[in-house]
Amino acid sequence: MRSSNPVFSRRGFSRDNGYAGFNTAPQAGGAAVGTQGNPYAQPQAGSPYAQNPYAQNPYAQQDLQYGAPPQAPATTGRMTLDDVLMRTGATLGTLIVTAALAWALLPVDDANISRSYGIGIGAALIGMVLAFVQSFKRKASPALILTYAAFEGVFLGVISSIVDNRIASGAAMQAVLGTMAVFAAVLVAYKAGWIRVNRRFVGFVMAAALGFILLMAVNLLFAVFGGGDGLGFRSGPLGIVFGVIGILLGACFLALDFKQVEDGIAYGAPREEAWLAAFGLTLTLVWIYMEFLRIIAILQGDD
Image 1 (cartoon, one colour):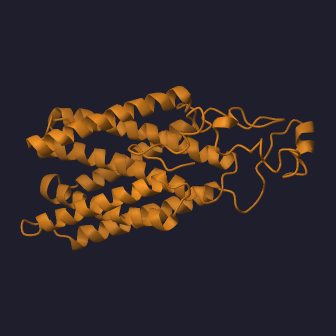
Image 2: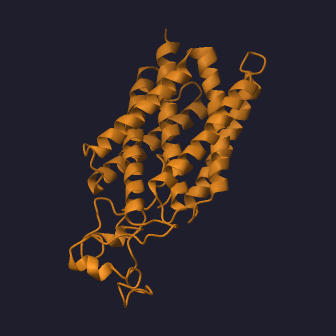
Image 3: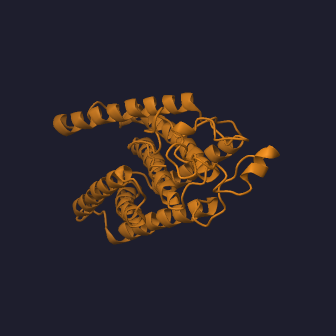
């Protein structure tokens, strides 16, 4: 399970057929369907257990006899939902603390806004580099993930303070509430089965996200070299439209995150994978928050 977010490559999507066991489940009497694309499936060829499929679990043969699905070995090194919740809480907690400190210690009045904004952008660039490094690492690095969260928090604190104090009063809290609402809605829809994360869903989301990111990159280039708002995709009426699209994409990525966590627990992923789940969820929530903040700034800034 690799780290996930709307910008960087999704975790687990580079295995064999391009998917990480989506729409698969443990099957009775054998390996999971589509285990070749599932990073948590039990190894077969070349495995020390290949000659004796019951070596890991002395009760596996009995389970197969009575049609019970194979269970992940009951060891303390397997990822659980509590592990994911604790790591996500630690990552988001670090981000929130540094955001609050940046808000309080970096003033955005006329005399200090340039300095504070520069610090925020610098923190964003450092956070981006750290996120790239973690995304390409084969294993989770808790220190790297928490450091990323700290720098990302500084950036969010500065940007939120600027928008809240100079453009749209109360925008930061509204963006937080909107992000929480999206998270809760997607979680309920996913658990109720209203969102089915299968290969078609993954392909659509990835294609839409790639197109969205490329379009925003082109808009940024026009803004840098041409000045103003570039092609206008991030301001005015078009900015609102693309902000809504960004939130919908973030919601789709939340569903992918939930599926990856579910698969990781079902197939007995190592406990350290919980840090990658926390990393992916944090990236996605930051994405959604920033889109909400942008929409609120555009709507209230035009008043």
